[in-house]
Image 1 (cartoon, helix red, strand yellow):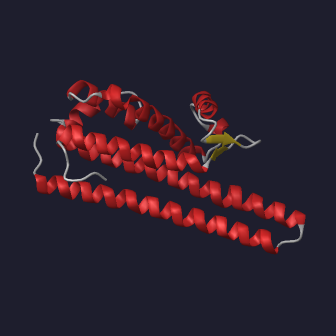
Image 2 (image 1 turned 135 degrees about the vertical axis):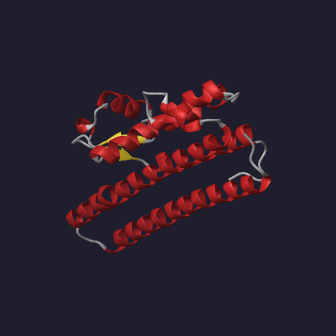
Image 3 (image 1 turned 120 degrees about the vertical axis):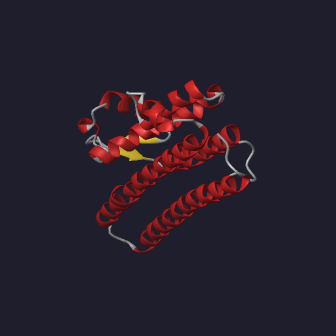
Length: 208
């Protein structure tokens, strides 16, 4: 399958705009939360009120925002991978549907291994990272981060333990997404998409 340089450039521009929007949104909201927190510290004299406010900032606002951003980066990667596979794998839909088990990412990983010459070994670490984030994303979407209500809670607990610098849990068993988790999802999804653009469609005019 071939794609014209014009279409390739249009795809790269679209994906770059998608990713830049998420990056700018993350930076803006995180800064606002930090600024509000700093301003409150400088004006609050009541320790009990301060404690309640920090709990509200950290969990109700900051963690909820990071839930949404992690979902957004997983969705960005999913859309990007599907768009690229559609343009590089003949009979894409039929071949994907023949793969019965797994998340969308694991299915596409199998699809690329079977039907392209892509060197997946060079991408393994980044793919593994995003596989973990997709599992976390599913827990957030289907159980709002409540590990006990996730179908694969044992695997989720393993992921949290493995990525303790990025993820944590509250005392009542809800996922906490640390700031570096969102940054890692951003950087990793960008690396994967750039690698796929280059290896599946040829060197693009520019990267995202």
